[in-house]
Length: 297
Image (cartoon, rainbow, N blue to C red; front, side):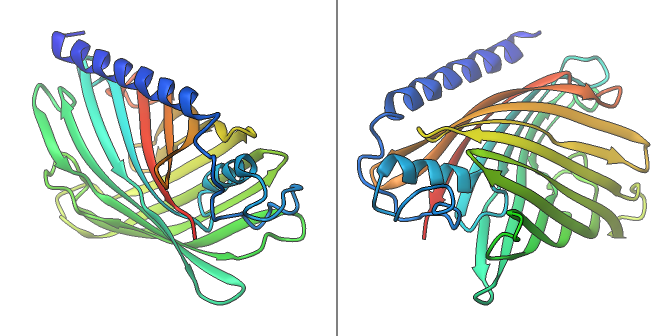
């Protein structure tokens, strides 16, 4: 590992330690006043009104955040660090994903949830010995979802996913327009959230000299939220490239703590991942930390 990579790793470790200390210090005391949002399933879980118990409200908000299509405006800044990629195995990539989730009420019974992933990427020695920095391609998804879970307690949403060629460097994007279906299904009970999100993208326009896009994304997930609003999550964010017949399978473990800075609820998350399967020049392992701004109704 070269000195630049060591410096980045040391900085990340220090940042993760700072975030962990902050969440531990605040987990007992930051919710001295109640939050204004009580998820629809709070009563079923035995909770009372929005102002009954600040810690219960914090846990309910954390559980709502564990739902990818929850009725909650959230703006995550997700920082990803991947190591060991590139042709020589010494490449490094940093990716900042801006991932706003915004629900819209269509009727009393239906929601439309907008979910955007806009990446900024810096990488070195991933393509030869060169480095690149800039925006990558954007993924925009829309989910039509019922306001209330099904009679069995399942929550679901489905709609279109769009690939937008927003990359500012041709080595950071596919230079293709794409579209396809996306869906999510999950269940929440006794602090647990489990389910899966899936989409498939086919390219239909763009630079003719570039390879077509045909990719399936699978994200099964399971998480547990404690009464102190700490969430432990295990998932995969797997992609199958039908053009190259290749899986990329990162296994992620995350710890997330809900805190409150002033009147603003924020979730802080740290974690690590291991690539169980990948292309020959894919990364070996990675780290992640995220800051998520929440805007309860």
